[in-house]
Image 1 (cartoon, rainbow, N blue to C red):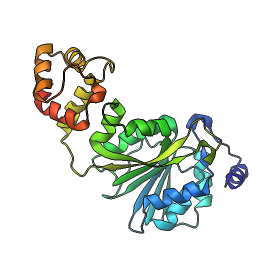
Image 2: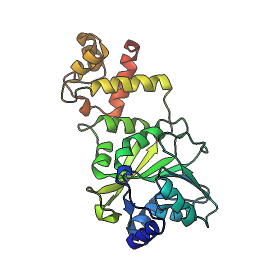
Image 3: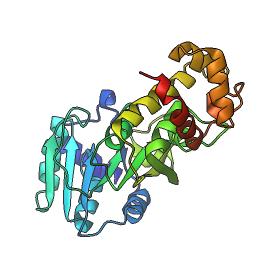
Image 4: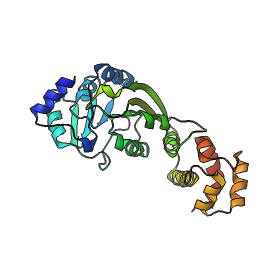
Length: 272
C-alpha cells in the first residue's frame, strides 16, 4: 500500500503536507478492521473527514449507499476525483471541515483518520450538532483516546465533554508504523456513540460553565474552584456539594458525568 500511495502522489506531483498532519494509512489489515468495525450497509450515508488519497474512501464506497468526502487539501481532491471516478455514490467536497456547514441526512456516520491537531475540535463539532451522527469512528492519537475514555478518579475536561454527549470506546490499537510518513506516536480507532436522550441548549450552556469552573485549577479543591469562578459564597457551594453527596475537598477529576448533572440541577439557579 505504501508504494501505491507514493506512486499516486508522484503521478499528481503531490506530497504529504506536515502542516495538515497528513499521515497516510498503509496497513491493509488496519484498513479492513476499520471497515469491519464500521458495519456499513447500502442504507448508510458516511461522512469521511480528510480522505487523503482515498484508500479508505474506496473501500467505504463499496459498502455504503453514499459517501461525502470532505478534504481541505486541493491537491488531494484532484487525486480523489481520479481515484474515485468509477464510484457514482461518492461526493468530494474541498473544504475545511471546521468551517463548513453540511446538509446531512437524519442518519449518517462519521469516519475519519483525523490529523492529531484537529481531534478535539472535530469531535466537539459533531457532538454539538442538533443532527448528530449515529456514531463516529475515528483514528486518533492513542493518549488522547485514553483521556476521552477515562473514568473517575482520572476524569479530564475532555472526558467529561465527550461523555456528556456520548459513549466512547477504544476498538483497537494502531501502530505508528501503519502510516507513511511515520508519525511520532501510536494511534487507536475509537467509536463514539451519541446518547439518544438530548438536553436542552440552556442546560448544556450551564453544564459546561460549571464543569469548566470545576476544572479551572484541576489540582485544587472543587469548592474553591466553583466559588471563585462562579462568584458564589464558599459556604453556599459547600452545602450544594454535600447535598449531592460530593465532598467539597474533592477535585474535579473525581466526579463522573452523572455527578456533574446532579450538581448542575442544584446549582443552575445561581448561574446567569
